[in-house]
Structures are given as structure tokens and as C-alpha cells.
Amino acid sequence: MNMKPKETDWNQLFSIIEKHKHEKWGLIPLLQDIQESFGYIPPDSIEPVAQALNMFPSQVQGVITFYAGFTLKPRGKYVIRCCRGTACHVKGSRSILRLMKKELGLEEGETSEDYQFTLETVACLGACFLAPTMMVNRDYFGKLSPTKVNSVLSQYKKSEKC
Image (cartoon, rainbow, N blue to C red):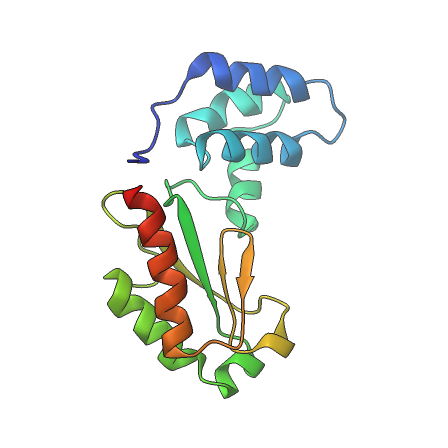
């Protein structure tokens, strides 16, 4: 299944905006809904969001760029996050990341051309007891070894061929 980024579906976008329009602190939940729906926050949605919430577009843009969880660029169906925290670093996350880059053919912050995978690094995943650790979307994988990384990645690659 190919997950190319969607064109902005204006009806869908305005429906999401309408749902949050009258909330006192609706910006973050609104942005979360947009990102959940589109896979990212389309840059052309900033202006209508700002108008609906009586804000400046720069304020909306500021919130999007401040929070690491928001993105203005389409990401892959599977977002792979490799932890670079101290515990993971000590336990070998550098070599784990090197292996992921090789297996996926991606550098940090890149998305595959077919929009299946995005590779990111994070300061900490909060699972130090499982070091070294990675996440694929919301699933954690810990106590990683090269064999385990290959197994996890092949599981996600395989699910794309079905």
C-alpha cells in the first residue's frame, strides 16, 4: 500500500477546525487532529487554523515548530525513532542507528520515497531500562541487537508486501 501524502482535503480540514473552533485552548488538540488525519500538518492549513482561532498565522506556526511531535512535512507510514539518550548510548545505540540507516537507506530525518518509513533520532524515549531502545510509531522495542533490529525492520517491511 502506497502512502503518498494526501492533497489537502479542505472539507476534512474545515470539519476538524469547526470541531475545535470554540474551545478556549483548542489549538493543540486541533493540530493533533489535523496531524492524525493527514499524517502531518499541511502548511496551507496554518492560515485557516489561525483565522478560526483568532490568532496570527505566526502564532500557529510557532506552536507547530516548538513541539517536536508536530511536523509540516509528510512522514512515512512507519516512523522509526532511535533513542540517543545516555543509557542507550552506553549500550550501543550508535551502532544500532548505523544499522538502521543501512537497512532503510535513510539518514536521520529522512523519509523513504514511497512514504513507508521515516527515520528519526530522539534525545530519550523514556525506556532506559530497555536500552538500547527504538520505537516504530507507538510500539517500543528494547534490548536491541543487530539481529533484533533486522527482525523488527523486516516485520514492518513484510507487512507492506501483503
